[in-house]
Length: 299
Image (tube, rainbow, N blue to C red; front, side, top):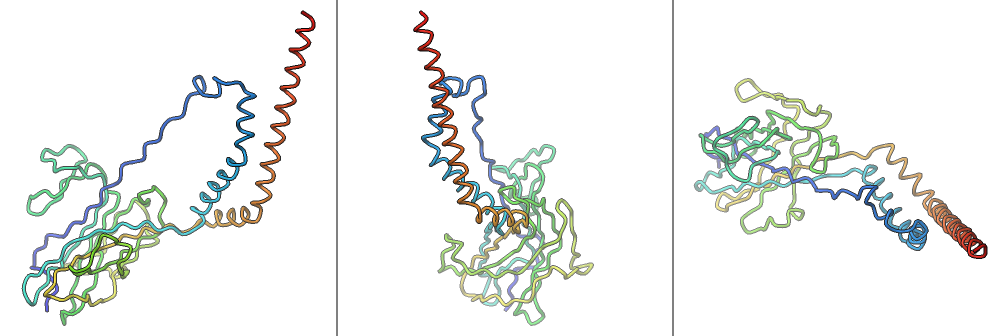
């Protein structure tokens, strides 16, 4: 059984559109801020009354922030491509795959401007990239001589070094799953993926080339041979998952240890500072009242 489609050299393109950045609401200016509209003593009283909840929530935010940088984190992005049946002996797995992430237009643009790039086969535009590529991985899929196994050979690689959340990434893993038509891919996290390509210790913003079918390959990043469990009588969906891995920061791990060991002490110190602030506010209120009473007596 052949597991490839025809000898077409046009690659299967899997596009990832970069999410829109989160819009942050700007805070009030000092000249028009809330604190200029209410008495200072009331602000202190408000903080004092809300302090227990503020401290509790604040420490939760601090802890989660430290954990975010201390623990290894993985951003996963699934991509899919349907595999059709060509005949009883041939399944349409592509020979080339190109994965690109960037800011893609919502529709095809015919009259391209500077920095806009059209992607398509035989002049048939499939998508228009509006700016620079953030990720590009080109892969040749090779078939063994006995036509029972395949391996994935990267030919080109570029990465800007950050994931969708703008976290710096140390390594990228590509994983694959062949899903028969009878199974759902709505819940991607329930699929069984097999890792097949691993990129690490590669410099960001650098174009890497790993050879070609004509010139020969640099096989350091090639996958091992694998035998897809595919029935040629059943359509499949090929799902590729990009796993962007940020390793935990060693200094953040130290902060995590120190914080965990002193969390109770930190909370007690904050509570004591708030109590002291409330006492100071009472003292100032008493002084103001005394001055006011003295002025009334004088009059």
